[in-house]
Length: 379
Image (cartoon, rainbow, N blue to C red; front, side, top):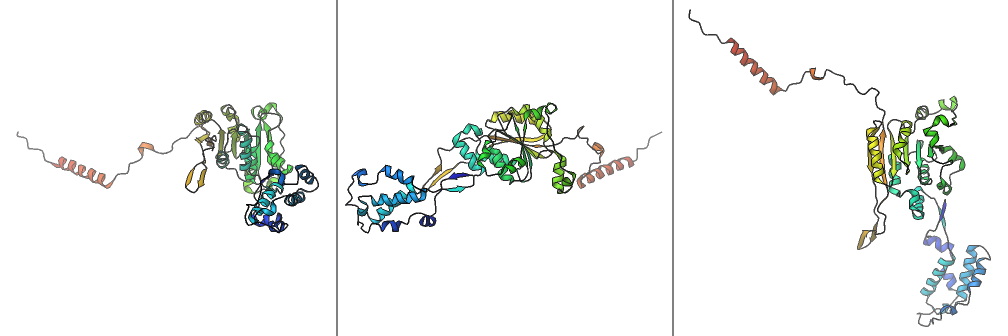
């Protein structure tokens, strides 16, 4: 959750803030125009900044703001010389300054990524909202899935995946250090119990050299496994991940041999990198690996437009890049290769009616030639 300043609708503003007509009635006199106003600067206001600070510290922010506005109007030497419109305009300006309000809104994965881009673009590896959407779409992120994740964005992608999974399923994060960098989860309102149930961590040593690392594995009770639905039971017994999703600066060609066997058949492998050349090397590697089908590189970009009437054109300050996504499908090759079954060339070729008629005519000519009598020989 986060605090964001939002505009309050006019109906709520009329109820929550000071009523403009009520405060204007404090001064029964108003001018028809502003010609009698003499501009003498700050001297026209009798209330000093020290007195305003003292009122701010006296009580709640809303009550203090209302008192400040009342005393500012009362101490204004030329307020009664303003028109009704000018008085209301002056009052609205003071309300915006001293009666600030905010509304607590839900922080989604897209908003968190946008916030991270504004703070430090390199921490999210130049990833755009469109690229993050491609990662989760091609990775088939859904409630109840079991995903293998490499996240070097500080947990921004993890946050977005947890949002889409709606508290169902598991995410296993592979990290380099002793503890994973998932600092983005501190902005979430997910309970600690939910985070511990959904997010599992494992370091690269446990992946590359499992014989040297002790992995804690807890089998579910037989009763709990039997009570599962058929689909969940198959997933548990199969034990493979539903997808591999990576946002990393690592050389993936060196670690993919350890990760591909952990992915189930017909499951996606989705990799992100800010440079296309890096993904090209991975694409060549996967093209030679018969376990990954059709690895392809994609780029998605959204161009915002200015929609002022008569001046429709793209925004000139928008980013022109957002990274690239490589997508492939894990398949299981048949051991020993494929063997063709059938008679092959011995199979009789089907003939057409025209060919049949041609064959019959040739056969009849041959038979007539054989029936022609030979000329008699003179003895």
